Length: 234
Image (cartoon, rainbow, N blue to C red; front, side, top):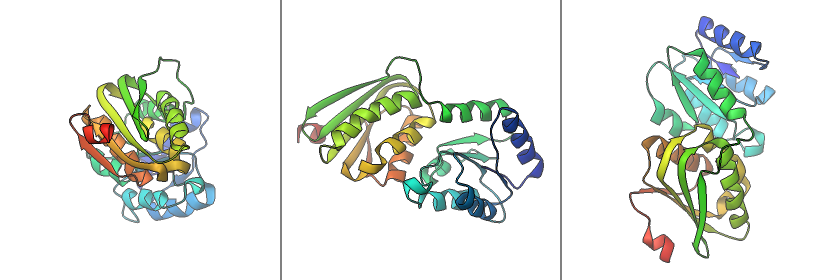
């Protein structure tokens, strides 16, 4: 679903995506998009933030209030004339593109969100220092495919009972925007077994994406500079 009150910009993006085989549902306002979203259930949302008839912030908040299986976890990319990345991520978007829109950036981001697997080596290590605690230590380039593999291990842990999660971001060199969406989808059904998430250091972008994912899941989240000894030692 493509939402923008600027007809020229919306039509240009729609034509580009359609030429790549993507079926595009267009809307010119947040309120119009909300009605169409409930009716069409798109697989991805790309929306402008500032619009007169229902803005993009309110739109994504309404979507995130839906159950996961009713579209509440739909990947969402914001488009804005200003760098409102933090506000957009914490509202429920997974990424933001600043205008003027570069069509190649939009295509690259859409591909990233729809890619199922990635052939690169795992960028994570799983540690279990004590029962009820799982440490995910990240390194290098973290992408959506690697996040899905890491979440598989976390789901196995959560299926055994409540768990504290420590996500060590200090070794992260790059963080794909799609990673948070992959994590949310993977652990949604067991999210209530996540007692707390500690985010340790790392790039600001990685911290922000992780915080946004925790907010969508409704999981308590704390930013720390060093490994939380109280969580690891009990």
